[in-house]
Length: 483
Image (cartoon, rainbow, N blue to C red; front, side, top):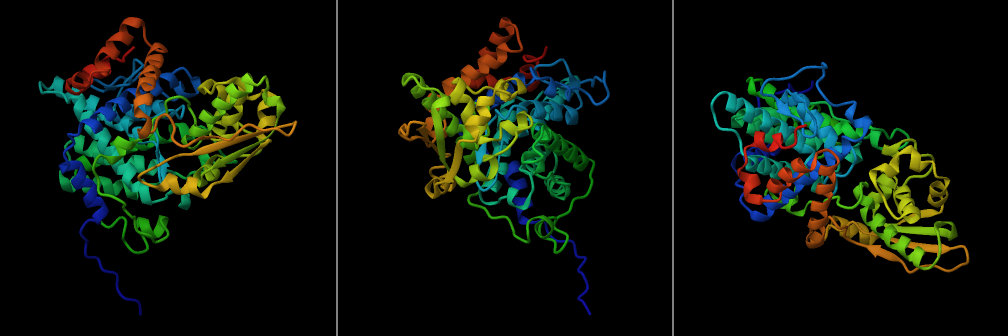
């Protein structure tokens, strides 16, 4: 006979307790983390403003029921919408991720920690407007920055050693988890309630990665994070009602997350939670491209200049060798037809071909009007990806965290250019001195897409001043972005 199943309710899994205790108790006061969070804030909102110029994104925006306005609800930057915090989180999360231009974290799992801003900003804005209506004090933007740092840390530290993509799960699982934890803290959950909420995030259904990969690559990858961060707000609000949680959601035999979805393996951790991830996050500054290709695009831009200087064109190229790291080959080495913008911005060959031909790579270059140029597919067919084991090792090295690509161009006449190698993209921590001024210029460009000059200047006046941003009430800062 089989042994009876114990029905003694266990203590919470240590992974749940560690997340909750970090969110509740860890003090964030480091200047580097807070300053980087401010840069992350403006860059992320700017990415959302650019996305609002694309009908494919804006068709998903607004309330679920048209015309709905929520008194004291959260406002959606760049729009006139005022929504409940769950739907506002979806709106903000979808717009900031739409063009694949917000920050990135690369490790055993990859992802975009600023995706969590959807839930954080929507919740903080709703809480602030509700507090003012009740005669209480609103949250300050420093509360938002601290929540961003902690969400980055939860998502990024789990990603360091644990690959969800290798079991077919999408990285937005970690957005849902991190957002649930920090949003739950913002709405005032007790420790037990917050453990319940975080357990619910693991119990939840999880997205497959199929929408990111051939032959099914599609636009869900642009709103999946909005879906995840909005679901987190919903789960936190459910926990606020006193709804129970599931303490051994990870470790329960047969029915727990590890056995059902992680091949029986427990999570591994490289470091305790602190502020490491925000301080080391990768910004996408120059190109809206999947991050494993950022350095390849930089190299292609250099090669375009060399082609011009030598009086050559892409038509003269016979072969391009892409020396790269394993993750790039697994995710964005793609042959055959590319069916839509989501397909193209996850193809390293496409992201190299466009700058070689045109000397640029913008979000518009993924649209059909550019992709129909036959020269792009001709050039793609001449490219070959080759893994460099040292590049792969340096990619995982916590002291380097490089994302190296190297391009060698050979010509029809048998000649070639010297290999062009770029190890660290402009958005890397090692290149902050060069990168941050460009990040600010990117923000200014994105503000100009949506607002008149007076409003642009009002946003910039506050956003570039660390002390003023931290002290400003959340609702007042969000109001700067309202149309």
